[in-house]
Length: 115
Image (tube, helix red, strand yellow):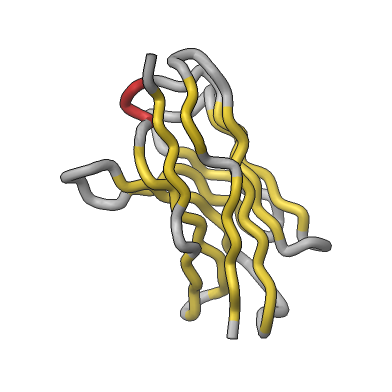
């Protein structure tokens, strides 16, 4: 079994910052891909950012320059630093980790950007 524990969501004003973390534990040994996705009400889940084991990061155009993804392989943890947050960043954020073809999802953490 693999468990993913997300933390760091919350309420923030536009222009503010938040950091998310997702720690994986259990029967998971080698993680190639770690990433963050989000789902806003009434919308499909979308990619926010991913990072592979060699450090290659990929970002959605909507978050480039504002969000930074990083990972700590010793802790099986992936992070998402979100700066200059906008109203449209409001969503439930999910982490995803694993190696093809097996991936695991976190339970989601709410991020709300509101004045």
